[in-house]
Amino acid sequence: MTRSWLRRCAGLVAAALLVGAGVGCEADERQDRPGITVVLFGDAEEVAGYRTLVAAFEQAHPDVEVTLSPVATQDDLMARLTSSFAGGRPPDVFLLNYRRYGQFAAQGAIEPVQSYLDASTVLEESDFSPRALDAFRFDGAALTCLPQNLSSLVVYYNADLFRAAGVPLPKAGWTWTDFLSAARALTGDGRYGVGVQPSVARLAPFVWSNRGELVDDPEKPTALTLRADPATRRAVDWFLDLQLTHRVVPPDAEEQSESSEARFLRGTLGMYLSSRVAVPTLRTISGFGWDAAPLPVAPGGVPASILHSDAYCMSAGLPDHAQAWRFIEFAMGATGQRTLAESGRTVPSRLDVANSPAFLDPGKPPRSSKVFLDAEPHLRATPRTATWARVEREADTLLEEVFYGRVDREEGLRRLEETVRPLFALPVGQGK
Image (tube, rainbow, N blue to C red; front, top):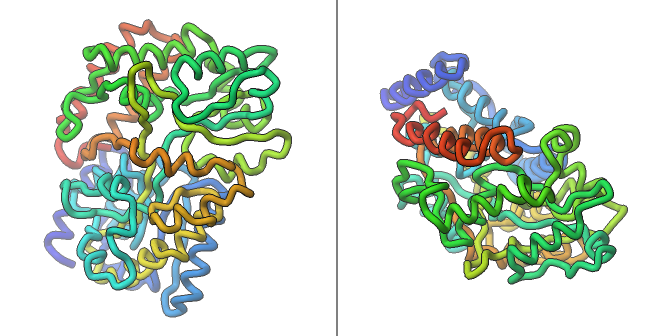
């Protein structure tokens, strides 16, 4: 056990205490465990894909035993990681979204993958989407984790409802006006036009499409700027008006009783905004036709979407990363990436697989899977900071209050900005 590991452990223990997690530093005990442990999040359909991946790896590498330890949600994953790091028994490999890995990277809890990738005879950096890679360069240069997917926010739509209402199907280049007109036409008789989560991640692409910014400085943010910039404020108001003015989104009580995804599955929601993560569940639909379309573009604006990407990370401070890296090499190779692509869960970050039938097969919905690849030039990422996950969590809670009319719009947005401003300045280790 190294002194650097002890220092990192001490910092993580302090962070864990802030959220009531268990603590301890038994890093030496981890050395006695056989094989490797891989921790990730996902629903049943997603986890099934990862189990297939693990089985294929173990068949190709019979000397390495993999213990797959899934949890249901990203919040569960963050709690698991915080506890395991604080207890000195972190997983060998974990899958983490770029909007959440900053707090671990800032504390030196992640073994950077750059040197392993540079030395690899199996993978090359040019194999992968540059935009996905850049989101995991915590210091702006070296890769911290290796991204396995390249998703974006898209519009899933019920094609049968569109046709019944006489509304043109969504297509590239459609506008906010087109989107709102369709939502209005699809709302009524127990149906709603749009289902969207009131969150920073859902709001962001509309701000960017209108040439606005979420924060004062994308590289070194010190505040959210939802009110000050006119372009940003117009996008914020347009987003809020979907609920507060146009009533094309299910109201608070109805969303609480039945989620937008469940409503879309039942055929009573015209459009549902989500990432590729929704596809395995949407593929269970048999009662109507559905597809995916790009986000609409702001008047006089530019196409934009938000990057959704998860990466394989290795825990720092462990005695040996050889087996963990072998697993990542396999998972990020053509075979591993095809396995998850065929499950429907991911848009492969590996470009050759993303452009292959494993992902683009028109026989498997959504027929227009290429929409995810077409979005790649227009993807943007949120800031890479140690506290960004907490900024989003606090902001989302307050944005939901405004979106559903529980608080006045002006007062709610003012309170949102003031509440999250101090979070940008928190010391490393207090970003939970």
